Every structure is written in C-alpha cells, then in structure tokens.
Length: 159
Image (cartoon, rainbow, N blue to C red; front, top):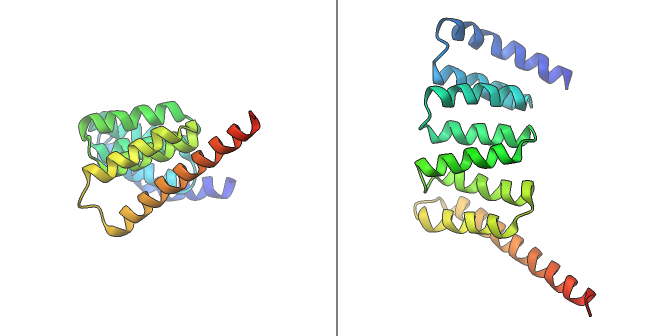
C-alpha cells in the first residue's frame, strides 16, 4: 500500500503544482482525484472530487466519481447521498443509476433497492449499449435468484 501511495504522490505532483495557480479548476481537481482513486487512495480521491463538485455542483460525472471514492473509502451513506444528488440533477444518468444499484446491494445489502435502481436504468436509457444492458439484466437476474433462494431457505427453516 505504501508503494501505491508513493505512486499517487509522484503522479499527482505536476497536477498539484498546476492547482496552486488555479485552485478552482474542476478539470484539474478531477484529474488529481482520478490519480488518487486509481492508486487506491480513496479518501484523498474523495477530497479532490469533493473540491471539484464544489466548483461545478451540477456535474453529474464528478458527483458519481465522488460517490465511488466515498464508497471505496468506507462511507456508504455519503456515497448514496452523492448519487441521489446526481440523480436529482439528471434522473436518467446511467452511471449514477448503475452505481446506486451496486452500492445499495454491496454497501447496504438492499437487493430490492438495487434491483429498483437497475430497472430504472434500463427503462430510462433505451440507448444503452447491448453489452451494458446485458450486464444489468444479468445482475438483476442474479440478485433476484439469490433473494428467491434465501426466501426458500428461510421458509424451510421455519417449518
């Protein structure tokens, strides 16, 4: 992990130098966040994405990146809040809806909420690529099957 941190510092250094002269440059802040995220420095990534969101609060992509860094950094509720804010700006955003489903499922064990997000994703994005559509449909099928299997096990236990 220390090696990843050093790599992040090395890659971020030239961007951070540019930020000193232009601290409200959302694109630079995004790039720094991406460096930290790619090197698993999620709390630092979230801090830079948060600064970028403060500069450009209506940028749904930045909010989604912030949400993922927050989630990977362990803050599930803040991640969900950012995705909900992104969706209040663009209710059909495919990345936000996809990530909302994943975080509800993995971060909150909310299979119904995950499936609802993914179903909305499919309904509201008819232009979605066939590969992405198939991935989402497979996730829905897997989550639905797992929930059905768990319900059957619980029913058998209660008899």
